[in-house]
Length: 150
Length: 150
Length: 150
Image (cartoon, rainbow over all chains, first blue to last red; front, side, top):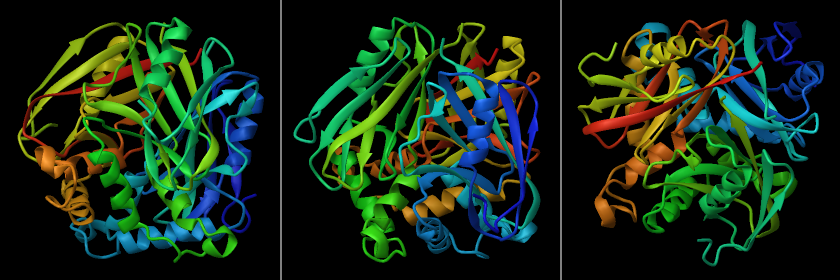
């Protein structure tokens, strides 16, 4: 699922929430974390409600995207590189990653996905991706919180 | 409310969640689904909490936007066409809709709206739109989940 | 925290929800509302769950972004000005703020942040910003709703 992009460790906190942690190996890459979020949902034993997925770190984000092959993920990286080039931002005077902050802010760190009869309410081709915009990083963290609707 | 853009059918699942289904008639169009989400909220009889609106399908999205007239909706379609042209993406080699996936990923499928005393916490000019980026489609699905805060 | 950008008053509604209100003094500016959201969380006395932050008004938005200095906030304003220029949209024939609606729709009004042991689950450099795209405004409103996960 994660191919060469990262190694994943999952750390439990409570039945309702877990923080997924993993490594990233490239500066800009989308990493499919759907299977990890599914594991959190299964361990929670909650059947219906919502699943909040939140990326910590101001140079990462969460995007729901197609995962039929890797082409869309590369298209996302290329589109954002065109829209938001490196090295031309005020913040680059601080630590040279102004483009990563802008990409992260625009995509956003949070997505809320319905939980239907114990399954993530994604459609066939929708998967959950962590967007790395300033890797490689030894540890990225995504907080998954499950809230029941009953 | 939906003008010529689509025909809408609503299908109930539980008191807390319904999946709105509707047809789209154009490749790219914003469809106002506010009245449909309001109906779901009313049927739930829940007074306070949050309403999670989630578009299934990796070529659609949800955007909160002004609905005073149709101009903003057309501006959204035109802006995204300029930012993300058709036919120049890696994914186009697969099924020719790379631009639709990119638009959907950037806008995002989920919005979470407060529920205040039985009413959606939208401001006067905010409405909820489904963004179609790869229509026409016989059936689009938006999952509405209501979570109480008490 | 809010520097010269605005004056903030917070108005309580219930233990689970408050509407933050504040003034904005510029047309386009990012205003750090993290401390205000933290106050709402503390007053709620809820320890774990999610915090839904929602900007009312179709010319404002909510962005999670770095707050080490003001450079990233200015970069966000500048990027969006480049991507979405003023005065070239259909909606400008109505009230001249088409760019503000497009910026707001793309950034989005809602973010959902985990609540972990009484603290917002932001990372060190992540803060919550209200994005003003059509100021100055006497009153902007952000609805904060806290939902327990247990």
